[in-house]
Image 1 (spheres, one colour):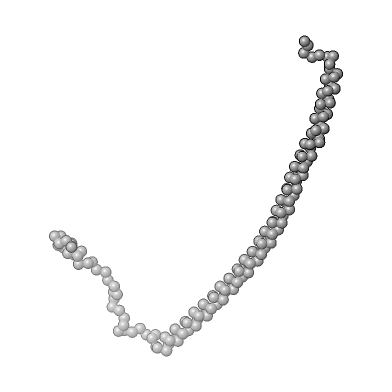
Image 2: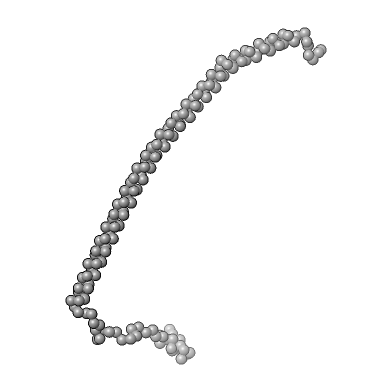
Amino acid sequence: MELFATEYLASQYFWTTVAFVMLLGVVWRFVVPAVNAALDARAAQIKGDLHRAREEREAAERVLAEYQQQLAAARKEAAQVVSTARAEAEALATRRLAEVEAEIARKGEDKPCATCRPKWPVWRWRWPKSFWKAVWMPSWRPN
């Protein structure tokens, strides 16, 4: 038996071509529309995702602009509060200083009192008695 029979070669080419054309018809009829539908669905999903992302980005930019406006307003208000408080504090300090100077002038306490002056040194540290007893009397021990 021959491995490659040449007398049936024409019919083999014919039936192989017929089978291949039938396979292409089945693929063209059933597989290609399914693949096209999947690709169209994926393209529509990507287009929708891009549209939704664009809308969310615009919304985020609007929120950011609003936040920046609120932040600028809050900083401006805080600066006004600080400047008002600083002005009030300076006015209070000036008024209190004037009151104290007026009170000192009214009482006439510009001169120091000789009798109320503390004796020098005001405070002097001393060793405790137990230390001296321990130094000079080594047999003595505190309780």
